Image 1 (tube, rainbow, N blue to C red):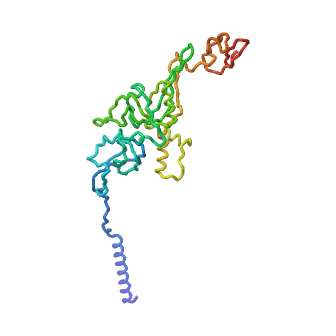
Image 2: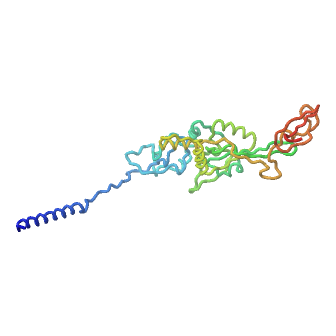
Length: 333
């Protein structure tokens, strides 16, 4: 090969290798420093905001609101500012206008106990307030506070014949929200601890139909409160959704779904869930009322006394022979 051509070939090879190394150095070299944007907290005072969605009628508790940093230029005179607000005075107030999660709480959005329209603001749409007398024995010894949910138990004595009365109790209302105890709608907190105090009346949030049932129940017997666990509502809601009793339409937003579920969880239930009679407690008490055939003494229309007093409830037929009427249980002779 010609020496001149060989020199040119070696020169071209050296240039190609140098170009490749230079390109590699440019591609794999140290990257230019990048400025990471660090979000800065807004400079300004802390204002009171809602920790979760607070619909109309919500009783304010310590976990419902909290202070959050807020830009100075966006602070309004109606806001509650940290250092200028007594949180204890806000506990027990009621939301007058709906507040979304993270939204500042304004003074006009809350109504305090004793203010005009307070109880009406605490009631949900279509609901009513009724007051029930209780004692330390029937009121869970004072461990019921505004905002709690209770079941109502009716205890009564049903008159019977000479064999004695029937004593019974039944849960006739469930998931009822407590609005107030006596005239208090908030919980007294001293040194960070809730004060337990006795009360003589409790005001409940119910539907108009349930209000009528409570009025009648007070004339029948004694009403006692049964405090519900916080986990009960969630479990019952899941069962209601599974059974189809609560329908959440497809395509609804998260806020609409929460509103539907919150409404379903907040409704009181007037279906009797359980009952107990004296026979379930003691073998010396009755389990049920005697049938109409257990009466002794002259039968209607005159005649001799019934031959047998039937202590157990069951269907009977009346057999008349001449002037004598006799009650015979079905299946008897």
